[in-house]
Image 1 (cartoon, rainbow, N blue to C red):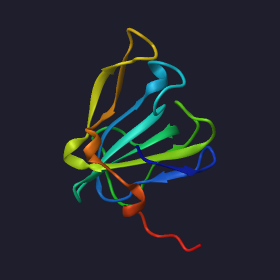
Image 2 (tube, helix red, strand yellow):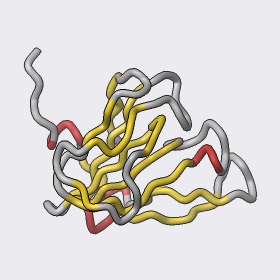
Image 3 (cartoon, rainbow, N blue to C red):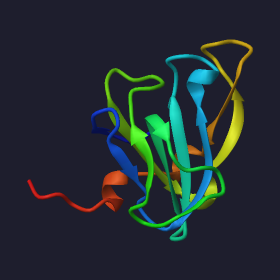
Length: 133
């Protein structure tokens, strides 16, 4: 779950608030063309967390503190993607964590990626500023 935003490969991706990088990874390392590809999980000080997916480059590292507006990554076209974009998922911060799970697509391989209960997913558009049209 989440929202996809059209973005050319290499568009800077910024932290939405102050927080800490809980994890980064690349599902393509486990099974090419599946899931998030290059991803980053940020837990914010406001009780929320977000995942950015399909990145071309992750600039921040696990454990790094970030502030709103810091460039943490660059958009891309990795993982299960049909074109360049940025995938943003927002969660209840206490309900999401980086876990290992077996791949159903590439049997015998293990993904490392953010996992949460379905009820912890929130609508990113509710938390992002409204854009004038």
